[in-house]
Length: 457
Image (cartoon, rainbow, N blue to C red; front, side, top):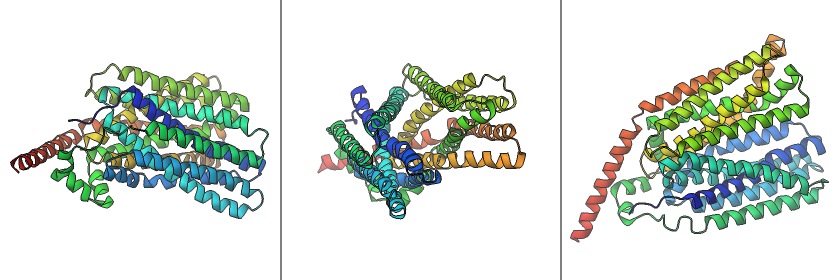
């Protein structure tokens, strides 16, 4: 009997968990950020370092995914990750309050808190994606990925709005109360969503006793990681995730300053410009989801076309930003919306491809593969903001003029997107499908041997 696939009810439950994850993270990375800088008058470098640190901790994602593979269930890792994340969120709020009286101790506790946040996100997020890769059919992957990510974005927006109202006017006690309440609420919602989610996902006896499954169970993390890294498609896709996400994240911290410094936008106008970009991302995500829902399972090349095309159009939009740095008449808003659409298209197509590749390399290592790609994304996001702002400052120092400096940075971003498209094209010729067929054949032979031995006895 095959493992039952997920319908939309199960996918929405996973989306609610992702929304809970985003709800806790957005408070720690935005609300606490503002309190440290504005209310406590601490250097902006401090929250920047803490956010970068929580990304650095996510290098443990492959180990978390391996743990889910080993236990053959994702539920304990998702629930445990959410509890750790919630604890880290409460501790981060406590650390922020502590900074007002004893900055040294407060910063020390904040580092520990953001370590827990990174660990919680790694355990919950990696296991959630691995479970989707195992149980969402091919034709539903792009719409499912869009649904889950949109629910996470909704979690960001709703939580930011509600928490903003609840802590206004700000007081340390109110911040702690809201943070604790949020962590408790998200843990309860996650527990309800996970209840019975994998009740029919227990491994079948003939799979558990097969020689291939036994070999996978006996492997340690180092051997499992080397095996996954040895898969050409997994390695190629890791490079793609890192390069594309590095280009994507590099623009985040320089787009609004660019609009203000070069085009004279007010703070309100730059915020609106960022909103237009996010709207474009949403349009791109929905476009891929709508197109993906009409494809027959197995025609993944169409999804790959969106991934490659999204990167190429992102490169084209970045070239437009280069031109906008040199011309005040350039339609910047339209350019930014176009960039958002391209970004949203390639990102959702990449997630759908990620889910496919996680299972295509052979069963039993979906979590490890997802962890590898999640670590690449975390590293890219951690470096992207830093390198984007650093490259802007360096270009300004060397070139001595803001327009040319920003144009140079956007030009580098265009090159990274174009190279990402080239890497994505290499996946078409990847031998992963052949490896997957060989692995499946080996497992089937093992299963047949076990069944024959069982019937003869």
